[in-house]
Image 1: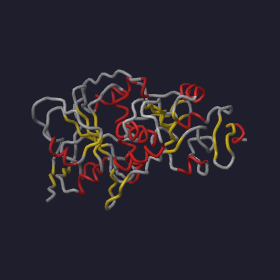
Image 2: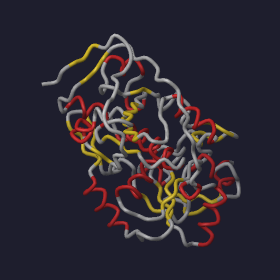
Image 3: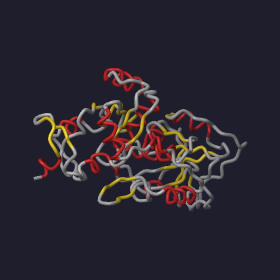
Image 4: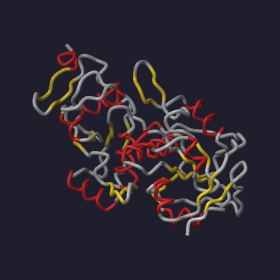
Length: 319
């Protein structure tokens, strides 16, 4: 039976021997429940309004015991720069953000989204990718998020949560995980890299346009692996299904060893695409284009492909 802990203030103090947990990229609630109480374990709740996932008030009303809160949309995990939304902030800014959450380089981080939809899962995937891009490999995602934790009857805490004590977090940028616009252009010209559009099919075909992109369409030559295609909904909670995902990747015939770039509109669904391809699908050389179509379509001379028009320039469509 689910128990609710009323906490007057603060989070639970986690006790236990210090050791790296080396979790799989995706863990279930039973795994996390068995690890609560481990030293150097941080449960990071990143719920936001995406897919009606909640906010800090939701976190204080009900959360995983001992977890810490950082809003995916409001805390500074992404930034707008030079007219492009959703970019990775400067490394030192992310170091300050992560250290301010009381996370240091010895911690194993479990990222917990709301669990209320496939787009919400992208919140956890983007923060997971950010840790990896900063050289921190001790990170995992809770499949089903907080909704799954609660749905399965695990312990829930509530009450005002105090801020953790800030610590030092030191990062080393892993440039091989981040694709720039120039690198995507070069990869496309060389025709040696697989470009994977993680958006739903209507965006890929050019039938729907994000307000972040100047025009509809996709990068010519890309294939489509929609970010939301391998989730199972159970009573309002969404779980990523690895077997279904691997079958969809196999259907695309992707080369496991070839360079692969995941993209979307603003690097959110692309983070899900990167996670699904690299961490679950086993592709060995996957990067994420955080600028995605928002950055790609800023230049009139760049090409885009639409299902009903073929390949045209951004400028032609923007006129």
